[in-house]
Length: 301
Image (cartoon, rainbow, N blue to C red; front, side, top):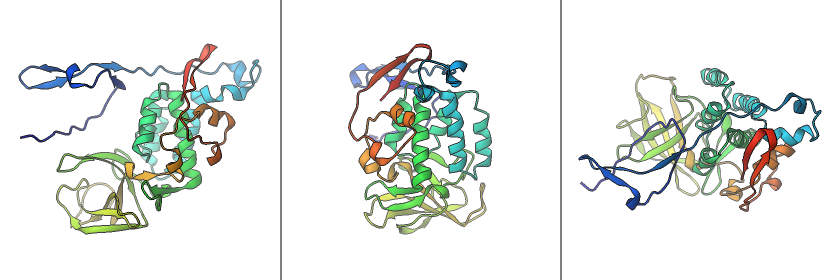
């Protein structure tokens, strides 16, 4: 009847659509399904840094190789994740089981960080897990240092990263579909500030059984941030009187208004081990690729 259809799926492989024009799609069978060609994007397991490099006995200084040491970054990301979400006991234990698989580890973390769509896309587009881990490490360090989460439109503070908690088995984040077919990627938070409520609690189509939802908007700019969920009956999961589900694309880290869409040299940031505002570039840089003998080709944005 002219309406659209939204489908929520869990992907098992990164892929790139070769041509999204309608002319490239092939109508098949009687169901009228449309198909298009894709290219599977492989994530090769990273090589370990040779022992003589770790012991600083190579020609180049040890710090030169740090941006390409996925195993070192993996351990650092695990530590940052535990510091950022200290009450996610079961989830942190699950993360520890992936310590021998940097590729899956990097995707596990990427799916759970409260990042906006721009940063989520940059993680997805990273063509090597070393770059993905590097970006996660950088942004998690910023979250721990700055702590606050802002409205992405007016950049007023609305929450702190320490108030993020795990509401269900999927973790602190999740993608949900409302009754109109719209997808919402949210992060669950204990406390917020600078938020107004619109309307009264509604139980219809609630994403959390036993909780009623109320629309929440920024009290400064009026844009939609998410929902407050208040308990109305016994249900599964933690028994809280209320909590908040804020849209990830409505949140921003402090100073993200300067950095959204930046290309930046992620490798340079980690090599210097500093993440100050002054060092974050706001211009697109096409640094290209660097080939480092035994480490393969590493992509630098």
